[in-house]
Image 1 (tube, rainbow, N blue to C red):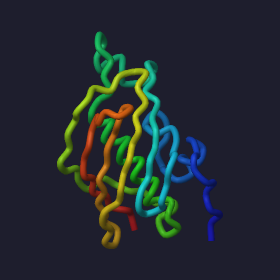
Image 2: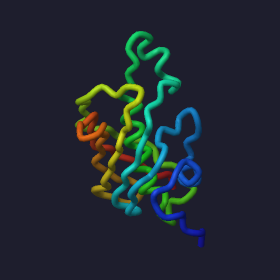
Image 3: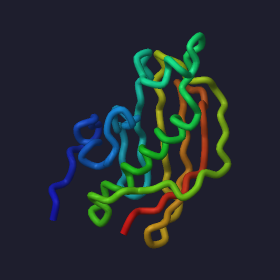
Image 4: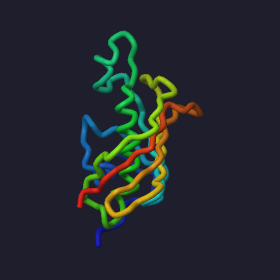
Amino acid sequence: MQAPFPPVPFGRDVIEAILPHREPFLLIDEVTELEPGRRVVARREVRAGDWWFPGHFPDRAVMPGVLIVEAMAQSGAVAVLIQEENRGKIAFFAGIDDCRFKRIVSPGDTLTLVCEIDTVRGPIGRGKATAHVGDELAARATLTFAVER
């Protein structure tokens, strides 16, 4: 039996023990709430030095929507992969549904990422995810994942 992870909140050192993602593709900085297998709340400080801003866009820095969705998915993966039966595995995207972008995300913003796991059947699951900046909804989607066997 593996040792339990530290209580929330926890940062990148613990996130890296749960997720296989590494720089420059690890898109969450901190987990602030966690109910393994059910719900997670995480944060991402959007920094002017983030690797995508020089090209997206040179005169108007905007976090790409696909990376916001990836950050939501990484948050959800923490809730799934922290479960003992899934530790050390990878959760792959299996679908993105009902995705909407409601607000531009720029350097200096803090994304609050929430994912609530709705259903899990074997290695396949679905969750509803949102990304907020303050009280404003930036993005939402229903994410389907497959945990490797």
